[in-house]
Image 1 (spheres, each protein chain N blue to C red):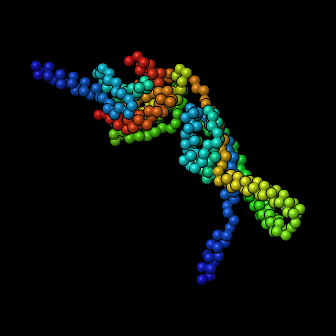
Image 2: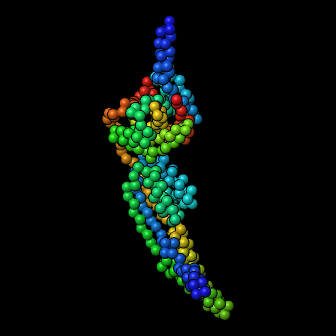
Image 3: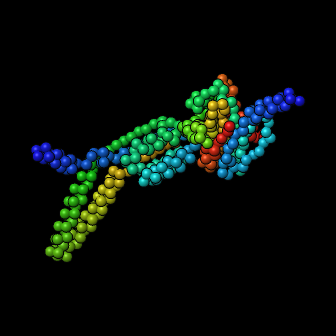
Length: 200
Length: 155
C-alpha cells in the first residue's frame, strides 16, 4: 500500500512538472554546405522542408532561408550531410523564450485588467471623462494588439527554427589519367566514354 | 572430316563464351542503339533524345573477386583520378545479383556533368554500366536509369 501511494505521488509530481525547457528554445542556425549543383540542392532542401511541415522564406542560387519545425533540427542536419559533398560550417544560436513569454503574458493580463476597469468607469463618467477614457482605451487596445502580436511571434519561434543555408559550389579540376592494376577499370573513364559516344 | 567438326565445335564454344552479352531493359525515354557486334564485344547502348548515353558491357571478373572488392577498387581509382563523388554508393539488385553504382560530378566544357558507373559482378564476369549527361538532363533521366540498372542480366 505504501509503495502504491509512493508511485501515485511520483506520477502526480511528474504530471505537474513544468514543460521541458527544450520546448521553449528558439534556434537560429547558419550552415554552409558544399554541393555540385546549387539549384538542384535548393530544390531538394525546399521539398524536404515542406514535407516536414516547414517552408521556405527566401531562396537564391547560393542562399536559402527556411523555417523548419524545431523537432526537425537533427533531421535537417542529417539530410544536409546526405545530400551535400561536405557541411563546411554550422553555427547555432539558441535562445530561451520563457522569460519573454512570461513578461508578455503578464503585460497582456494587466492591460486587459486596466481595459476592463476603464470600461467600467465609462458608464459612470461625464462627457469630458468619457473622451479621456476613450483615448486611454484606444491606446490600451493598440498596446494589447502589439503584445498579442509579439506573443504569437514568440509562440511561432518556439515551434519553428530559423535556418539560413549558404550553398557553395566547389570548383573542380579535371580528373587525371592514373593507371589501375585492373585492366577493365582503366577503361572506366568519363572522357573516353563521352568521346567514344561522339565518334560512334 | 571428323577433326574438322571437332575444330569447328571448339571454335563455336570459344566464340560463344567470349560473346557474353549483357541484357538491359532500355530506360524509359531512351532508344536502344544497335551497334555492330564484334566478337567479344557484347555491348549494349541506349541514347536519350538529348544525346545522353548509357552503355553496358561485360568484362572478365579477373582476378575473381566479390562486389565488395570491386566496388572499393573502382571507387578508389576514380577518386584518385580526381572524380568528385556526387552522393554515396547505391547498392542495388539486378536480376538477383547485387550491384553498386556511383555517381560522379565531372566538369565537361562549360557544364557540370554527372557520370554514373555501376558494376554487377558474378563469379566469372562483371557487367559494367556507364551513363553520363549534363546535370539537368541526367536529373531528368536518373529514375529511369536506376530502374533500368535493376534489369541488367548476363550469363
